[in-house]
Length: 427
Ligand code: CMC
Image: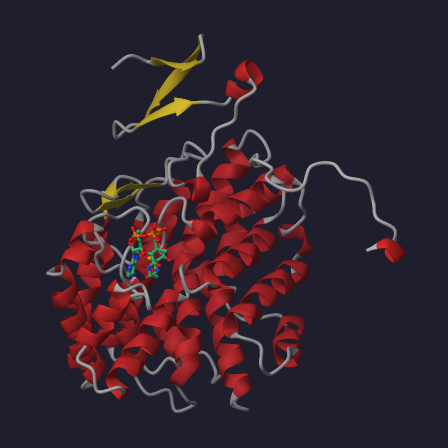
């Protein structure tokens, strides 16, 4: 294929460079189009817009492929773990044993929250959603470590490894601190031999007796985090990159990403799935009435559909079987799991969903596992955020080291044209 395309507007031709990605994706470079032609391009919701060149994650939505730094998600799910995948995402290569061990130690040593951050969490209005707490606490964490959050690019890049370890260590502690405080409980003392997920589960549900954590449960949580670790230019990651492009530090950029993730069409979908399944269950429906109402546009089948995947989300496939294993290990019978299976079966055979290429996404089964582990529903999106933090951090680093200019889309103005001000008495 030629490395140039021509756009014809009226009788004028405008040559456009073709950018070819390493996986043979093709893009028209329109960066000089406005200067050359006075035209901008219009793409509501950015469905057809490449906002950057990135070397972190590759998705082929038609084939259902997801790779971190070239490694297939199914292979990473089988052979890697969350913290190893974090280093892979940050640095581009699989880490050595000593790099992994150092990183584990660093993350673990930075997981205790500064006292000011703990007091801030305690003093937030009691009705604040855990995602609101997380965003605010990340800003407070940056404030507690001014040397890691200078908003001076070279200094922030220099301290990236430390900031990243701090953020990964602190986010589970923020989540657990808020959960415990809201129940007037304190976090039990840390146990030195716990790994990342065991420590989080201990902070959430353990006690001073330090009963052992079922490895099936901590492994399932580790898998959920790994599967969420990055997903290229989604809403929250694009938000993180947008904030970073203005020169903001990683803490501020991640706080913004947390807000973007919160919504029910993005990370909030895992909460919405459980709400939907519970409502179907209490209505005595096996899912068929709900499918009908989704087809009529009266409701949305949460956990289904994806902007990029027009095939089975590979993460949902892995989580579906992890869900069966985790529930067996926990000895939990879940009536809503049967409803979820029914919904999936019916939707995959239904013309409405087939035609629109709507398949289960990562959120369809993750909430069922998290609920069985004992996490309250309003924390599900925080768990998504813990998993996605390395992705946001990797994108922050990519912008900070390779970003060229501040992100600033254009618009087509469709408002009132110029008009004179009307004095108050004449309105
Ligand atoms: N249930 C019923 N119909 C749907 C659904 C759904 N879940 N998703 C899309 N559609 C329909 C939609 O109504 C439209 O129909 P029509 O062509 O007749 O107007 C068609 O499918 C195309 O949908 P769209 O809204 O244009 O697709 P989008 O790419 O803008 O939205 C989405 C993607 C994920 C926001 C959407 O599929 C959705 O709302 N899904 C439910 C929420 C959800 O599970 N979100 C988690 C996404 S994965 C994790 C993450 O990245 O956060």
